[in-house]
Length: 182
Ligand SMILES: CC(C)(COP(=O)(O)OP(=O)(O)OC[C@H]1O[C@@H](n2cnc3c(N)ncnc32)[C@H](O)[C@@H]1OP(=O)(O)O)[C@@H](O)C(=O)NCCC(=O)NCCS
Image (cartoon, rainbow, N blue to C red):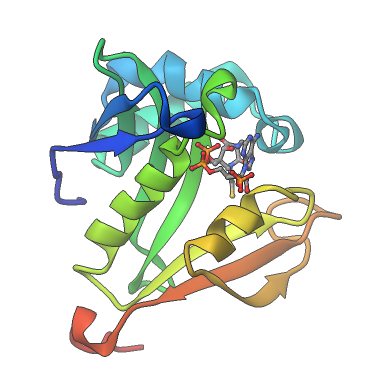
């Protein structure tokens, strides 16, 4: 279970206008439809298509494990989510299983805020954070690189034949945590 941190993060809209006050909180089934909408309206959701009932079961399990965090605006509208499995990579390192922002809200800093949240909880547990990016996803890698993730490998045909997953890692400082055993 990921420790929950209730915090307010300020995101800046274009040219610094339209300041958006964002809270990141553990998601609940109340946010199910919003999370599914964020994922569905993306190439990621299209390529890795799952029927609605499968998505509902998957997200509900993620909520109950406390692994999904949602970004809420001042009106408590859910704009996107991040799914963090704290020991999801190699049974010992944090793995960001998924991140998606609602289509009309992309490019405004919400994804960066959720990824900063990932760093905050992830580096309390490990000094390496993992994320996978599919080869068809050409925009997301720029964001991860900007945030300091390094490309360390590729796994072909991991989730689907014909699609490769790029492995990205963000290395923390040696002070971030005691060594993780392999
Ligand atoms: C990738 C994603 C989570 C980033 O969230 P975001 O809120 O749009 O990201 P931010 O506003 O903090 O940062 C913007 C950066 O994200 C990247 N980006 C990726 N997809 C984008 C999109 N559709 N629109 C705008 N920026 C996008 C760009 O590199 C952009 O950098 P730039 O501002 O220098 O052009 C979001 O775009 C999304 O939900 N995409 C669809 C699902 C997906 O691909 N998830 C990633 C799985 S690995």
